[in-house]
Amino acid sequence: MSRIVAAIVFSALTAGFHREPQQPAFSARTSLVRVDVSVTERGRPVKGLRPADFEIRDNGVLQQIEFVLTERMALSVALVLDVSGSVAGDRLDHFRTALDRVLERLQSDDRVTLVTFSHEILVVRASPSDRERLRALLSGTKGAGGTSLFDASYAGLALANRADERGLQVVFSDGLDTSSWLSSSRVLEIAKRIHVVTYAVSLAETIEDRFLRDLVDLTGGAHLRLGSEKELESTFTAILEAFRHRYVLSYEPKGVVAAGWHRIDVRVRRPGASVKARPGYLSQ
Image (cartoon, rainbow, N blue to C red; front, side, top):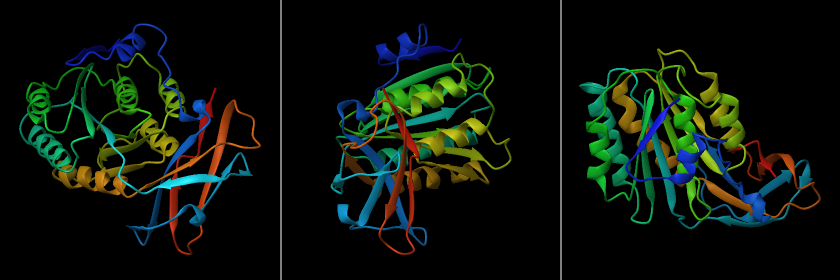
């Protein structure tokens, strides 16, 4: 079983690794559903859209969009980094630089959590200004042991999930899971219940992990494959900037059964625009 050593104790998370994992509640539990949507045209974000520009269906039933959030909303960002291989030298330097660039682009009311994992999971949660505590965790890492990708992804989801903030998880991994306690299906089930968007980053030379592909598809994110670790800095900052330009749609489900899986279909009334969002959510 993976062992969590947290600089800031997150009791609900650690309890989940020793008992039945607690399931963070999707916002539909309070009747209002939030959907994080990316709208692009020729690879660039489309700005200035209003509720009338969107169409959303819940299990095939057209819904009334309450609002489209365009003003800045505080972010809760979880950076989940695989340190199961060697993290000495270049890789550790690239991790540090990527972390610094992300912190530089966060606002004072944003939150950031750094999760490093091998067979162990280490967690530090802080404000963007508390850079030294986050860098200290990276500096003290020693690559060894197995790869607890499923457990670490669950940690990132749980820590990024907050009702009053937009949740973003960025996972870097270059290996397959070998030592998690949680199953991949369990983590994917939890991802269906919360509104955290996951972006996965891997090196092109590594074996493609189906779990990461399924996780980003379920949450409306993307899986990026890099040619070199030197691209980590630009990739992490590009992910953050793309996430800031996404829209947050809100609606109260009407004409559908409350419990169970809800398939979501989001469209935008703009020819040539591409839309990406989570395919649905699981409501209790």
